[in-house]
Every structure is written in C-alpha cells, then in structure tokens.
Length: 197
Ligand SMILES: CC(C)(COP(=O)(O)OP(=O)(O)OC[C@H]1O[C@@H](n2cnc3c(N)ncnc32)[C@H](O)[C@@H]1OP(=O)(O)O)[C@@H](O)C(=O)NCCC(=O)NCCS
Image (cartoon, rainbow, N blue to C red; front, side, top):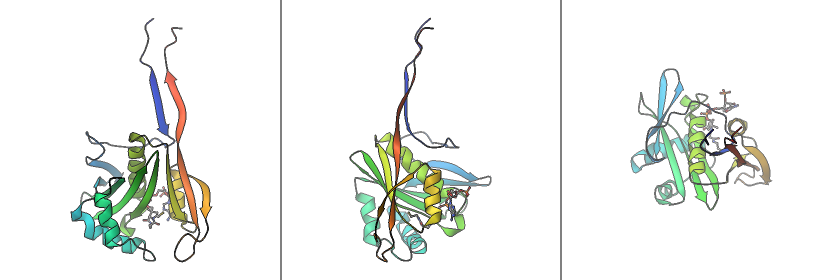
C-alpha cells in the first residue's frame, strides 16, 4: 500500500462556516452571503472609503472615535490590515475592521458594524476574515481589548472562540475597564499519514 500525502493542519479554533473566497491573495476582494438576500464584499480600506468609515466610526463609537489622522495612518501602516465590508446591493458601507500584525501576534484594532446591518453576521464575516489573514501570515494568536460592558461585542468574540484572559483596569478615557480577549492558534498538528496498515 502506498503512502498518502502527509497533511499538517494548523488552524485557529474557529467554527466551520460558509466562507466564500474569491481567488487570489488575501488583499483581493472577498464576498460573503450574510443573509439569504444579501451579500457583502470585503475589501481593503481605501482613500475612497475614508469619509464613510469616519462617519460610521462616530455612529459606533460616539464616546471615543478614532480621529481622521488615525484612519489615514491605517492606509499606510505596513503592520495594518484594515478591511471594509460593503453591501453589494446598495453600495453602503456595512462595517469595517482592522488588525495589526506584530511579530507573531495579531491585535484587532477596530471592528464596527452600522446599526442597520447588525445581527446579520457582518461582524462575524469581518472577524473571520481578519483571523484568516492572521493565520495566513503565521500569527500564533489574535488579541483584542473590549469594554467590559460591551456585551454584544464580547458575545461576538466568544462565538469566534476568543477567551477572556486579562483585565486592564480603567483602560478607557471614561475609566471603564477593558477585557483582554485572545484566540490562540491551535497548536495540535493533525497528521493524516498512511501508516501502511
Ligand atoms: C459588536 C458588533 C461589531 C457586532 O456586529 P454584528 O454584525 O451585529 O455581529 P454578528 O451579527 O456577526 O453577531 C454574531 C453573534 O455575536 C453575538 N452578538 C452580536 N451582537 C450582539 C448583541 N448586541 N447582543 C448579544 N449578542 C450579540 C451573537 O451571538 C451573534 O449571533 P446571533 O445574532 O446569531 O445571536 C456591532 O454590534 C457593533 O458595531 N457595535 C458597536 C461597535 C463595537 O462595540 N465594536 C466592538 C469594539 S471591541
């Protein structure tokens, strides 16, 4: 009996789902069906999307929005992967999210979904895409900070497999605590090797 290919599967612990990749690298466009009648396109952040993203930031984070300068820096920061989700029917920006790839760890910097598009898995699609990119780029973990009272976001991250692993006391300007949540790369190597039996 011959040898089958040895397969080593290294992956983050992420529930299998309906990922629909367009061919090409992770910087190419990518689309995902978010509900029966709706498809979002996830693409790299661009200058053209800046005004709408900045406006949405103020809707989603009225207490402490990123400045225009901070968003502009994401366009050129070599450590940053920043993605924008667009509703293909209307052309509206449904959400955005970003990660910094630092050494062997991804750090989610931002994730937001327009209120009109919430609970339709746009946040999930963005998060999955960011995790996938971290995985492709060899990151060993993905980490983020979230307001301790942001139950919706915490639930989203827990659904994705993130676990609470720390607390930053009074981290935010209004002195709310931040939870640190991490998704570790699954270190188990699944080996499928025909042993000849
Ligand atoms: C948090 C946020 C990004 C979620 O985006 P979303 O597209 O609505 O999330 P999804 O539809 O992908 O939700 C996936 C799962 O996460 C959980 N979840 C998401 N929002 C939730 C909420 N408000 N309350 C409880 N659970 C929630 C649910 O388990 C949900 O699955 P379900 O809808 O089948 O129950 C969005 O509410 C948002 O932009 N909030 C304001 C900005 C923000 O707080 N960003 C996070 C900063 S750390």
